[in-house]
Length: 63
Image (cartoon, rainbow, N blue to C red; front, top):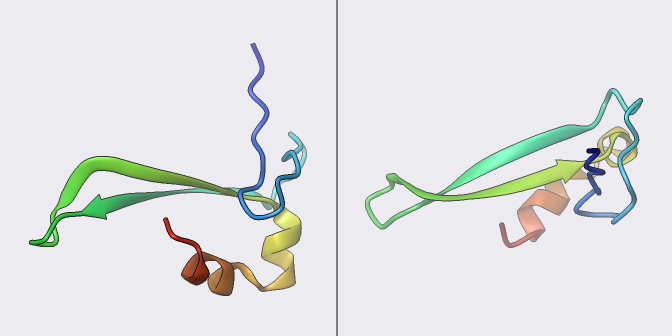
């Protein structure tokens, strides 16, 4: 079974040959700064990374 990832910022599918795509896992923190069991998974395609806009998009997103 194949699972097709989509870029969270463009909603385009991430192709298997996109070697510059990344998947980032961010842990949610509680009031004391400790990681909870909740995580956010962000898929970013290579074209967004190459454009240099990833930092701004991650900052503006509500992960």
